[in-house]
Structure formats: structure tokens, C-alpha cells
Image (cartoon, rainbow, N blue to C red; front, side):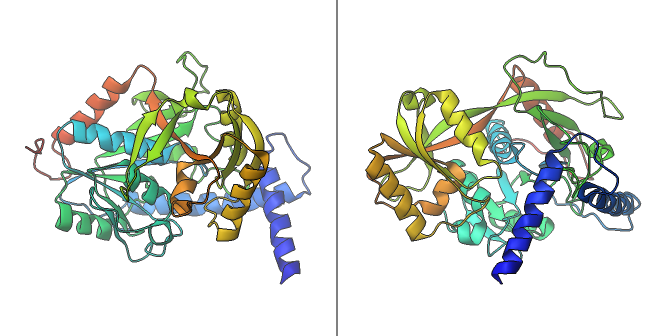
Length: 387
């Protein structure tokens, strides 16, 4: 068994290395094998898309507006913080809104369930998955549900909460449910990875899949919107937004209150010595962001994405902080929800998360959302803000 695990880890490392390569490789190489598999995968994804377009594969509608947040690459482009932003903007427009996420790796991913009704959180990360639990803690007043079958979960949301609008987290590839607005996120630094489809690259779908998007959001951009963009891959004109990931400290509530507040500026971490831990797709990116803030990282603990922490692991992190006599232990919001019940920290535990900030364009996004919500679509009646 140990030998098999070693082989699997070796292959995972080879694939990860191949994905990072942008230069040409010898014909007889591991990368060529992955490239062949990418062609096969791409053919399957193109066929799937055409079957939906032709109506051979059915796509169903819900009796409310549906907005999807997604991307065409694997990895973090900011889908979860973008979902949070869009849900809040819709509520500010006066509509009842609910959020649906797949619930990846949660026990209820297949059957579906209610994570939060906006006032009470019913499910933790083991049942709901990491991101839905985080969204439930951030989105006070907005129901959050999980379920791989988005249509069935949408019906559950309608029966229980009667939303005017449902926001789908990470659903660009879920064409079995019709939507009124499709927002596609691209990493502003490397929007298409190395340009190859899985498993040779990061692309979940061919770039032509962006035809389904009603708007494009480049994330991880700098303050300036004058950054040079790649050749326009889009077959028709559509709104393009630029956004950045802004770090924010989320403070857990006291006395059993499960919702986060954003009560501290990120500058409170400047010149602090910390022990940091994370289980993300790219932990180094998180650690680098702490360095940029001005933290001194005395020690870091890095775990695989969606890692489930054992009591021993959290105890080891706490003991390291005690031994090094640091000012604080720092982790991400996604990781905090999995260790929220651990209370034996020798110093302050600080939760650093990211939020999406549009660069000089939040009013444009607000108008895009408002237009999508008031126009007739998919045979639905015009809706008006909830009173």
C-alpha cells in the first residue's frame, strides 16, 4: 500500500510539473502523453457542449432568476469571494437571494442540504464542504445550500426560502440548469494557464467555451486597469471587469455566534511574528501575501487542498506557536471553519481571508446585475425587489 501511495504521489508531482511548463518538450516525453489525453478530454467536452446546445442533453429552468459564477480553469480564480460579492449586491438591490454551491467533498454533496437559513448555521465542513461553510459564516441573512444536482437543490431553495434570485457558486460547466447571467472569472496574471486542457494544463474547457459567458471578470489584477491583456479570445463583445483580491481579517463571533465580522484592518498584522498554516490549492500564495503585509513568518505549516485537520495536527501548530513565542497564529477562512472548535491556542488566532474588489467598476457590475434581474428571460415574469 505504501508503494502504491508513493507511485501516486510521484505521478501527481509529474503532472503538477507538466502543468507549470510553458516551453516545448521532446516528442517522446511524459508531457506528450498528457497532451494526447488533453486532446481526448477536449473532444469529450466539445461534444458535451454541442449536445446541450442542440437540446439532446436537457437543460432545465427554475422559476426564479439564476446567476452563475465560474471559470474555465482549475484552481483559485476567486469564485467564492466573487459569489459573496454578487450575493450581497443583489440583496442591496432589494431582492431575496440564496446561494447554492456544490459542496465539494462534503457528505451531502450528492443528496444536497441547507447549510444556513441566513440566521442559523446547520451544517459544518464535513457535511457541507469547506467553501459553503465559509460562505454561510460570511453571508448573514442569506441562505446557503449545497448539492451537486443544482436543479434539485434550487427547488429546495425555492420551497424553503422563495428567493427571487439564486447565485450558483462554481457552476460554469453545469449546463443542466439554465441561467440568466453567466459570469466567467479569469486569473489576470495567467488566464488560461499554459494554454492546454486537463491533464496537460489547467483548462477545464476549451477557451471557446467563453462564448457562454455574458461577462468576463479578470481577477488578481493590480490597482491599475491599464495592464496589457492577451489577444482577445472572445468571439463577441461583452462587458469585461477587472478585480483584485484584497486581504481582510474576519473575526469569529463570540458566545456561539457563528457569523464572521470584519472588524480589523489588515494593517494590524504588520510587524507581527506569526505561525501560519493553510490547506489551499496554493499555500505559498497565502504565505507570500502575509509577507507583503509585513508579517514575520516564524514557521509555516502547509497541507493539501481541502485538508481535514486532526486534533494532533492543530495541537502541533499550537505548540509551535507556544515554543516560538509568536504574536499570533494566522490561517485562512477556509481553514478556520475546520478547526473552529479548537480553543487551545497560546496566543491570538487571526483569520485572514480575501474579498473581491472591483477596480473602478462596482457600479457597472451593479447595473449588469440589475439589468439581468429586471429583463424578461426564459419565459419568467419580470420580478421586482422584495418589499
